[in-house]
Length: 123
Image (cartoon, rainbow, N blue to C red; front, side):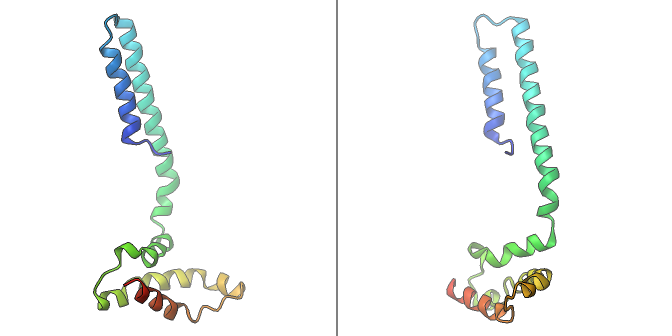
């Protein structure tokens, strides 16, 4: 799970509450700061681990190309733009999976026409 603002605010909130205690000693304060610091290191480690694991995937051209044709929320409203929208990306995906789809017995010939019909139905 990626460290969120809520995670950070929770750590800061706990530290803030500690600062507000009437019986706060320097020792308790130092312990609380160390705990908060460790929590931030752990959150940073989690973020780094997630980035290391998923950034290569997010930058993969086939995965990027897979997003555009299916992202109907960002489809352009103008018919001329919509007609072109996602076509290049669909071709990238189809080229990448061409052998797999054919070996599985899929008829990929109508994909372009089906995609055009799909886009028309969502305009």
